Length: 242
Image 1 (cartoon, rainbow, N blue to C red):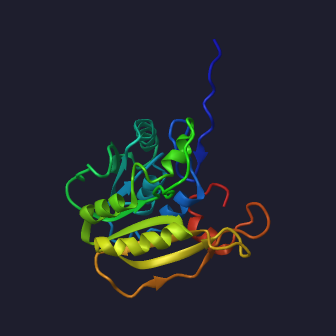
Image 2: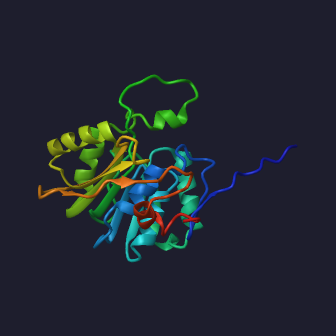
Image 3: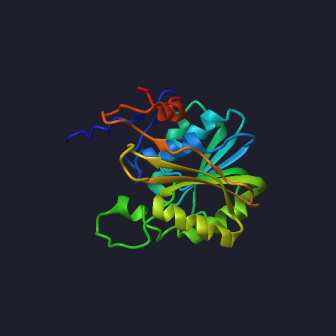
């Protein structure tokens, strides 16, 4: 009988992520959000749609005093996130819940920081074998449900941070006001200087205030892995070879 060889995990400087069982693999979007979200003063953190758990674990690294919870509707992904938590240096402060965020009641109070790398396609077609594509559609987590859940679970002075493609991010920002969540900080991201803006990092709070528009982030120059100084500064505590 042939023995199945487990794929190599994704290795960060202080932890590793096994991702052979989860639908969403480690990607730039998640790392951007985990590195960019403002953890100042956050003692209770929630990652909605945690997938492999990578963002939650990054936030546990960045905020040594915080308790971090992840909620994930896909059972296999949730078990993988639990595995990654167990082998991380911060297992005592991390926990994963297999549930939809629409029914999740939270643990012991509201959250100071909520993050999500949410699904973003609202249309398109599905094939019979497209788990990764399906999880990026909004069928299981419509943006209205995400905003409603974030509002319900967020502390009065809390922050809610997401990463989305440009058009979806602009729509999400407009929709958020219907749920009394207001954009207070954002950063546009380009893969290269000559490329269009591809992603928006967005922060929301319960009360409107002057919006902090951060300088555009360009990820790399022309060469492969030729990272810009700004991207190195943002993510350098995590990537193994940076």
